[in-house]
Length: 190
Image (tube, rainbow, N blue to C red; front, side):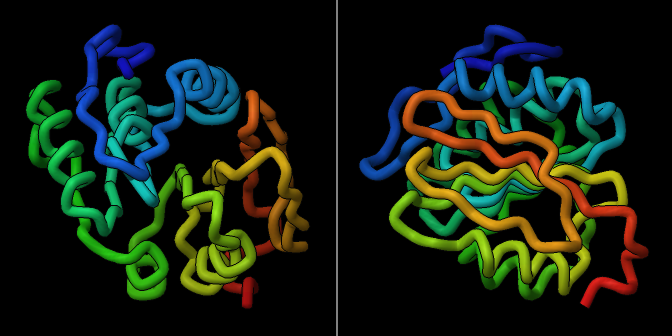
């Protein structure tokens, strides 16, 4: 695993992964960020990396100029890997926050708003509908923000009427949904 582009380009991330971690591959991450490059300007963006695992998504965003990345992960072993990767890249403390929490609990209690939300839940759980409901209810996504939701390519989901499907990208056995809020006023989302 490595950083694809930006100020940390080609830097290698921790290869010592605990059992059960299924990191998004370099090829998939490169494809995701190629799509995102046409949708957002990374400068000054706030990124939320849910089910962060190794932190590779948030770290890639920081490498490309994101203002900050928040990593939400409940596994101590994964958090240790994220910390090691942050130390390896020598990232400033004001650019990141690591939150040890269950993702759903964090989202329900969160009063922050993010420009990019990346969610890579374990494929065995069905979290998409609950995830969208919480994003909508707590207004976690900024007006021009983008959600990237990773799931098994064998699954399909319906998109809430308050959101717009921008793109679906399939890579091997993985599917990525790119979603944004429609032009409905944020405070009218209930």
